[in-house]
Image (cartoon, rainbow, N blue to C red; front, top):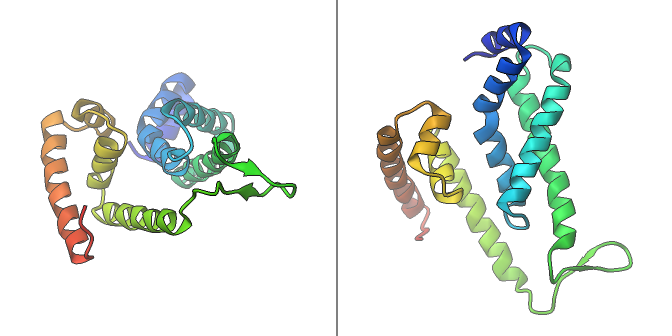
Length: 185
């Protein structure tokens, strides 16, 4: 459904239109949120943040200029995810704040290993995104969020068998890309 068709549906029935908007963007928003808070939050935290994102989008929908919906959704998702990350990071056990409000690392923290792990994650995510859509979304949903082929198929309007085939092919392409980079998992 195009943004113009979505806007037309919302003008006829806000309830149906917002339901369609949610269906179109829920995987995207969840991915943005989970990529930010996954290390410090739970699935419930992510789902709460996604709910907050859509509440804000629905509340300010009339202010979104035509042709800007996707960017607006991404911006709200990123901003809310950053807020959630900050809120959840303070709660993380083993991390305390000094008198300036800066995080103090526990003595057993291996900063070099953590930095290398973060770098590897970033390169892996970059390679997954280079696969294009819907393959990138399929791999992230299947292996990162542990969603079933049926759940992914429903969100992408595909058949479950097509999701499984695409996932297998995309995974092989990803392995080839990572091998070219000298990364073995």
